[in-house]
Image 1 (cartoon, rainbow, N blue to C red):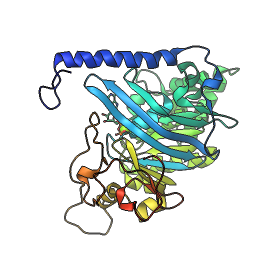
Image 2: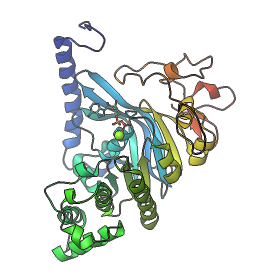
Image 3: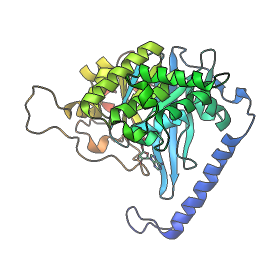
Image 4: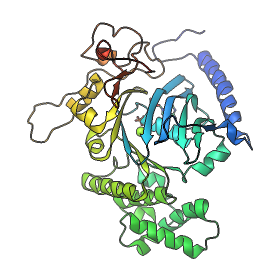
Length: 385
Ligand SMILES: Nc1ncnc2c1ncn2[C@@H]1O[C@H](COP(=O)(O)OP(=O)(O)O)[C@@H](O)[C@H]1O
Ligand SMILES: [Mg+2]
């Protein structure tokens, strides 16, 4: 193997070798997924618990880049119970979006691939493993069973088409059979009203640029809900909005969820939003889940040093301090992860044992789990990390 010239730089020869090897691996994945008429038995599976809408089980999603393999999601397991909201938190780049894009099969192809693990989707009478589903089948699931609301509403809408046409298209694509143009338009108007757009007839005729950010996000929510999906992924849906609009959009999501009884996977880096929205919280760090529990457990009794650090770094109303806490150090390089706890180099609470291999999952309560050596001695440990 050619020697690296300097930290982070590759020789031309080395880069070509990596690119060739990547192509070989990703072509094999793509070929598998492009097959036609794949029998259902190939991706049929069983939920570990039928009360869950989605189960991520030891998910590994990698990007085969010319600089090396980026292990964006490296063994993530958590579940989204039916009718509940699960908040996924963690700093930028920890793999939140990649986890949700893996469920939608919307990863950047061919570089992005699920290489290991399962994502079980509860279809009611049966369950599918999304990671094994060919493109053909996935298209029927996307939008109908799982749909997604993105961070930036302007980039999710097409600037050259009117709002009405864009929502109509979604309905026609998924539920268009036997419907006239008029029926579809009526449904669009109904959806626009449901997401709190007062002048729905007017907005139907408008272009995206004529709407404010909050209105655009409402339109995106209407599109995501058009087919009453069982699972809604909201990936930082309010990050691009200002705070008052953010509060309105959160209210809207909460009300709609109760109306259609869906499950929500709510991705954010904002702990305040989590506290308001979620029933359960999953804390991610460097592509892994470091802690999960009910919203009460995570907020009143955070166990992982990273979660404790996150809690300490959020401002508290009425408490006067000179400087907010910030977690020292930086996230490890996803191309070259350490073989010990990924948080160890930044951790201020290390105990003897931390230099060992990546800590496994320790159970603190029926719903509270943490991957940390600090809890090894007094609790029963088990399961994967
Ligand atoms: N298309 C891509 N190609 C290469 N690396 C990617 C790609 N998309 C995401 N990543 C990497 O995966 C990691 C997780 O990204 P992401 O899930 O988007 O983070 P976030 O938690 O902020 O949503 C990051 O290190 C990011 O650089
Ligand atoms: Mg993201």
